[in-house]
Amino acid sequence: LYFSDDKAASFERVRLEGGGASALSPRISVAADGSYLIFQTRGSDQSLSVYYSRSYDARSWTPFASFVESEELRLNLLPVHSAHDGLDYVVWQSMSTALRPTFQLWCKVSSDGGESWSSPVQLTSFDDPETNTRPESEFWDNQRASLSSLGNELWISWERRLGNASPQVYAGVLELDTESTLTLRTPSRVSPSGVYANNPQVFSLD
Image 1 (tube, rainbow, N blue to C red):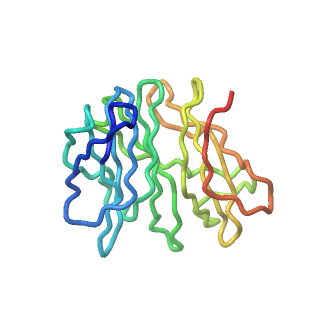
Image 2 (spheres, rainbow, N blue to C red):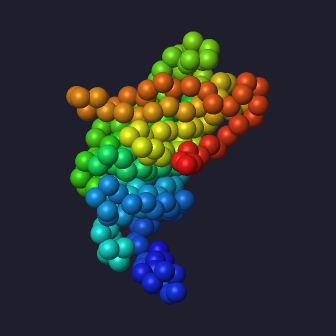
């Protein structure tokens, strides 16, 4: 990790101990409490999974800990993080164990800067608004999520594909109800029908 506290005039290097497995695609972000989070994907012969480390000063980091503990979620990758309304949200994709494996999106929430996390919640188990089909029965793939806190809402967009059809961009709002139940509100397709659309990014303009 290289960081600067003099507006990029110079950089300090910090080595993070990633363990013996290959570490891929590190992503750094700022947690809701102002601390730092780094997420990485680790590979082995049988699986990929997500690990994370925390720091308050960018110099001293906690040992990388496993982020996905469920034995049923064995292929986990591409985590994205966003702080929103005092909470931290992380969404990643995991391959299902269905007869035809597909990628589904899952989410965890933290209220203490990433020290502890909620149980994983699957976000993409909804009736598709465009085709009125269930994701498992119609072989929907869901990949490459993007998160952004826009005003008082937390938006998510991602790449969604039915079988071998061209991928489409979908978007919706993540929200917690009064009982802290996480839901994906009003998921809908953004891209026009028939186009090839992937790797979406959510951002605020004006």
